[in-house]
Amino acid sequence: MTAQNQYVPADRATAGETPALPGDESSHLTIPVRFGRRKTDQVGHLVFASRSMRFHGTVDMRISWSEVSRVEHAGRDLVVAFHGTQRTMRFSCQSEEEALQAGVLGAHLVALAGSDSYQHAGV
Image (tube, rainbow, N blue to C red; front, side, top):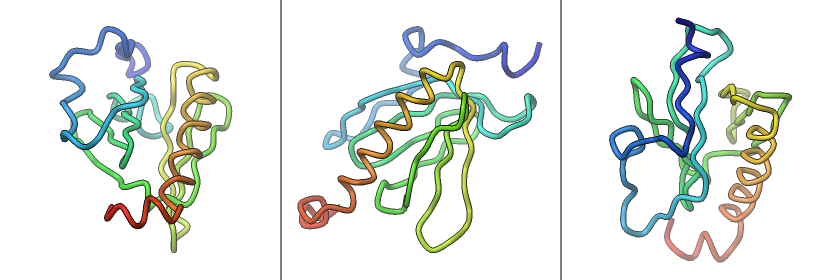
C-alpha cells in the first residue's frame, strides 16, 4: 500500500488522529496530507488553527503563524515558507481544491499574524 492510499478523509478523522487544541485556539480546517514529495513520506492531518498550523502524523509539529512568511499552493501541493530563511515545507494534498482552500486560508492567517491587533494580543 502506498502512502497516497493511506490518507484518511478529514471528515473521518478521529479525536486520536487530530488531538484537541488548547482552549484559546480554534480549528478552521483539517485536511489529510502527505508531508513531503515522495510517496513514502509521512501521512497525517494538517490543522489550520487560529494561532498555528499543526501537522499530526507519526511525528507531530506545531508552527506559529508568526513564523510563516507565506503559504501558497502549487497544484496539489501546499508550500509553507518561513521568515529569515529559504527553508520551506511541502505538504501534498489529495486534490488541487484542498490545496487551494488551504493556501487561501493559510495566506489569510499569515496576514492576520502580521497585523497589529494579533501582535498586541500577546501571541
